[in-house]
View 1 (tube, helix red, strand yellow):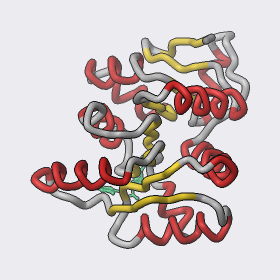
View 2 (cartoon, rainbow, N blue to C red):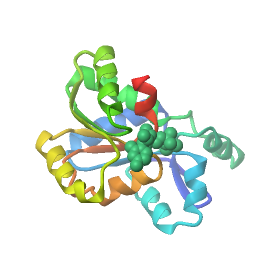
View 3 (cartoon, rainbow, N blue to C red):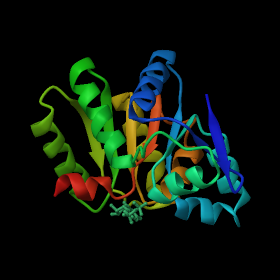
View 4 (cartoon, protein in one colour):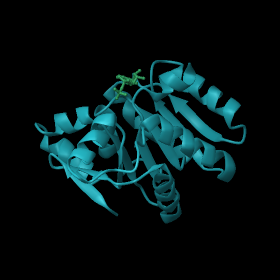
Length: 195
Ligand code: UDP
């Protein structure tokens, strides 16, 4: 896959259609994949955090989320096709899930926000299979039970809305405990979707 590096941080030259093809192939492959939607703030943080840089550079797909990325890519003479934001990617994946039955779990946001976002998504995509939701204000001591709960529901995809880059570290930390084939950090997207 074509990629470029901005200040040592990798971005894949993908548009939404490419990204959805990757999601499909990740699910077909049947093992864990981490997708990051990258913005300039995260690149900035990665300059002083090698573990964040390594995490991004070893993810399975890194989409150009922020307008700053699009600008920087053009400036470097390596333009990316379009922005692929976390919320747009989440909604497009949900549209696909409505057609093909992928099981989805929503994790993050204030109490009730993930559940309200799930309700809105079910209104928009009636056949969507959201197997569970959980808010994002849990203690570390509660994580084991949460992971057991998620595992019991066997989602194909988890959207994690804990804010960047915390959600990226959380996904990385628990990649071996999550039963999903695709994990995507989506920032404040549940707040937007829940209205
Ligand atoms: N959040 C959470 N748990 C926390 C802190 C934040 O679930 O301990 C949620 C918060 O409710 C919000 C999202 O994470 O829904 C962060 O949104 P923000 O727009 O700040 O994130 P960004 O898009 O900038 O990464």
